[in-house]
Image (cartoon, rainbow, N blue to C red):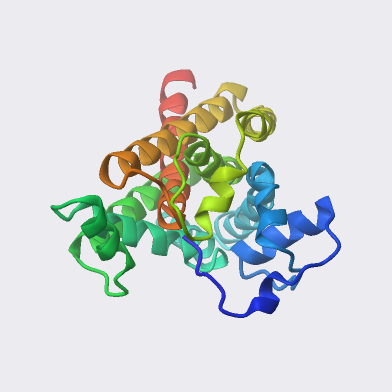
Length: 269
């Protein structure tokens, strides 16, 4: 999911604080130039806040979609494609990279060691490219659906729920023995998970309230389903989860959040 830094100064020990940990997490996982660094441990302790942080990223995406669709009047499919491109770009393509690597690994016949070796191979093969294509096309199609319906606020919920999928994967996963991903999994306790998912649930219901509060709730449920599904696949194929698996859970969590919200729209509206 996230590339390890060879520069020891990246995790330079600073006086820890909640705010610094949150901003450090935002710096570490996006290309937003905050340049606020802290240790991996201090960031991982705040993993449960990730959905809220990503909600702010979702607001940026909402603004872009509103301007392009509501003001400039671009075609909905074009706006949906730009929205997806923006979200994977602002995350530094880290989560997409994880999806590609994990897709390569699970498509290989063999034991867990062979699958892990394939995941670490820098050359992407058919399994990873196909996974990226399927998830990407379905996500864009979902964006197009909600943009066409003029429910742009759901874009914020979906991006927040991408990280609900990730923290769900964390809480249901066994960590790998090495890699940055293990810190996020080890620090994600069940209590922190309920806190993070609970905040996301409340915010999702409030954001979708002008349409129907249940739609946002369904979005969070969908993200949890996606995260659990990803954790289950990782356990089956690898016996543990690493950074690539967490990156995958972000992309799958977003997709299932959108799918569940669209399902809710068709049944509730």
